[in-house]
Image (cartoon, rainbow, N blue to C red; front, side, top):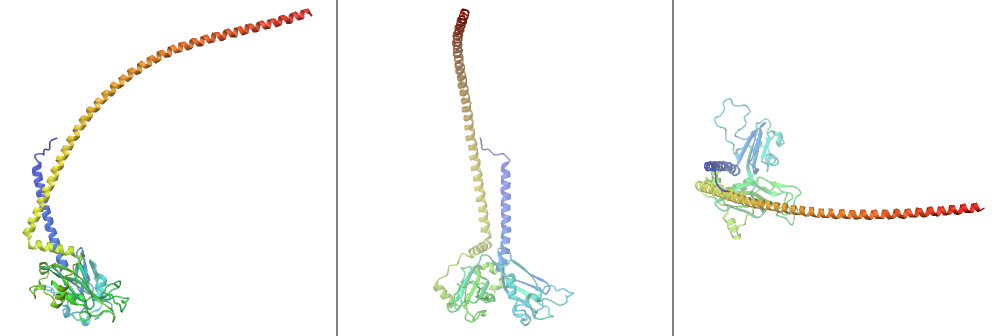
Length: 436
């Protein structure tokens, strides 16, 4: 068997390889675009607002959940919802008012808690905006709106906990910086082993201050290192007196270039990421850096990979083309080896089949010869046995005739002897009677 290819296979292989390369490249470009959109969604902060009677929808991409940063329901100084529609539409929508410019005298204090209970840690959330959703109407007869600031927290992230009275130090290896997703100050149920107090027992209810995320973000967002003092002086005390509390922060380390591209305003005031207090960081350096856990490693590696591709597109394209070429060469090598081995296997299978057929033919001929010889022997044995049996049968018949003749003669003699005895008896009886 010869391993030969058809003449038309060369162009087909080249076209197939070209199509495969183009397909892989297009998919890679599309995957990079999707990943870029995903990173922008999980790095930047998002906001949404809706007026009374309208639905509010919060949404995050896959592998991420909603993390509420702030919520406001009421009537602000900059009106987003008008009582009557304006016949002449504005060429550009009015920007969202900052949180400090809103009228907090006409606001529902339960807005943040309601958003946390309904949308926190979900991928998609939709709420109908009306005063009944937040309890009592803070200002009846006034047009109100709901404004929510949130982030999309990835499933792979880091978590750090510091007890009350300690200093929480967060750090990232350069060129990565901190991105804060959530921060809670207080004590939750089922966390008796976290910052235990030997003097007081933990309360039977949760006492959490979710507004701590704003303070932590102001101190740590976009920086390589930061230090935050954990105590009632920094955060509002949500628990009863004597309860020992702790600060829990969810964060991730993202490349500096990606965060600057997603949020250019964060580095406008400072040229490089800074830290809060030099004293706390010196203490942190003296104690030695803490080894981060495995949580969030995948997220950080993905961000670094994407950042490298963004900064070195030519090198990334060269590596991708090289990997495709190496993969195609390995595939062709494997196919050629398989074809060669298969041809040899077919040749090896053909030779044993021929030899086996010849051997079978010889065996059949030998068996036929042996059967013929056995048949001849059986015929001779049958003839001898037939002859012997005939002579035996004649001898047996002769002996039977002799026996029969002798028995007949003996029977005749006995009959004659009986007749003679009977005659003598009759003679004697007659003589006796005549004498009387």
